[in-house]
Length: 231
Ligand SMILES: C[S@@+](CC[C@H](N)C(=O)[O-])C[C@H]1O[C@@H](n2cnc3c(N)ncnc32)[C@H](O)[C@@H]1O
Image 1: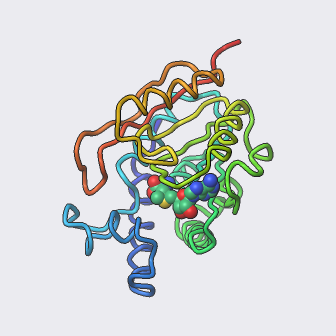
Image 2 (image 1 turned 90 degrees about the vertical axis):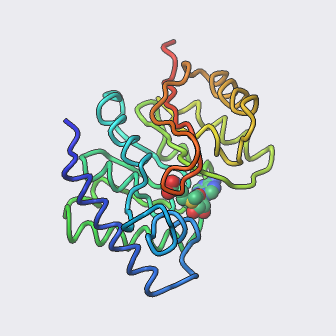
Image 3 (image 1 turned 120 degrees about the vertical axis):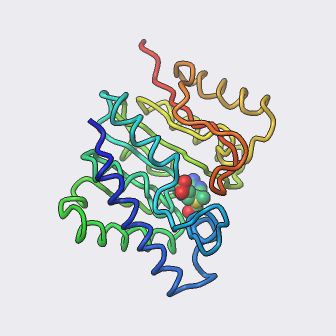
């Protein structure tokens, strides 16, 4: 059963961590965390949050609906909230982050959660400093879910092709259809994205979590799961 009590503890510890990071770094803290998670900078929040609403929805979906999954790989993880939460709930996770400043924060957050919540967390949660999919074959296989939540980044056509190609190794994919490596404002672009993934051998998408407009400062999005098709 999904452990909402552990979810709450992870949420509060990450929120406390972000408050301390902000006190130490001010505007040097990565903008994504400064503007979305901190009550001081997000008018929709009455208190700082450690987990976004979609982090919680994805974790619950994976625990309740993906018995095939032995590993969860979070691409563009930043602090790796999703991987920390799922590891605290018992899952093996890998968090892939290219930016060294964010990667350093991720490692310090892992240490903190290990000390305060679950001493065995580092056995299940692995931070990986990589530009996905450079070393994807090391950590993606048919029992792996690869997740791309809210990831805007400018990539070349060749890099995009390499990302799609790497999905063939995975058992399932979770992605933001609005922010898969660039913002896809038009429904046609989102449909084309889904078609490109289906062409790599995946079933039609199942909605994990979707919202309209702005929710707590997060732009509308649709997070979907796509399972590798039975061959
Ligand atoms: C918006 S931030 C963190 C988002 C986080 N997943 C969340 O939802 O809170 C996106 C991160 O993706 C990282 N990133 C972008 N492209 C990447 C790639 N190909 N491999 C690894 N990290 C990547 C950036 O360095 C940045 O830290």
